[in-house]
Image (cartoon, rainbow, N blue to C red):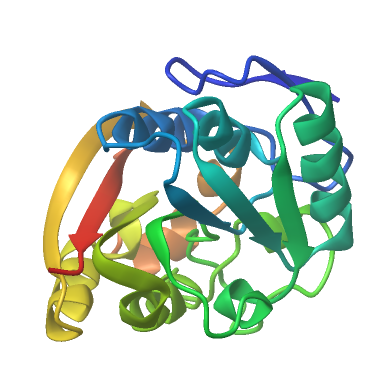
Length: 227
């Protein structure tokens, strides 16, 4: 599958192998936020859960030295192929979030993690749902990134993470603040529910995550700086 990134994502056409998350609105929103940071030669960027490598390629084109990580071998292969096609030098590693780069710290950490609330308590171990299912509250991976961020950031370093407001914008801000980071919402947009959320409307209503006939989702980019 060949996917276009959304406005602002810059890499253009990207290969996405079956089962790998194709760039969508959340990708473009995060890319736009990244453009507002001081990225250039000498900036070390870590992209967690890189998927197709869209954000990694974007950061590399801004001049950064980029390391991209994903737990899925197919995503690692996809990101490497897209880096090669874009003629960008990116280190792509297979691993579980920051465990793939132990002891390393970065100027910028980006992440578009799984964040969709799921009826299942168990995270999928394979298949496309691995890219979006994140436990019943949608925070299984988001919370892990919040907890890892202070050690992954250099002084003055910035975490940029995109997720749905359905999994709790205030919860993310509060968790990162308690970890000692200076937090804000860097960007937000509202989009129609996609097919996954539409298929889970009854579950989302039971959980109190949506009300009535709501059919729009807010995406947010969380910015957290280590001061």
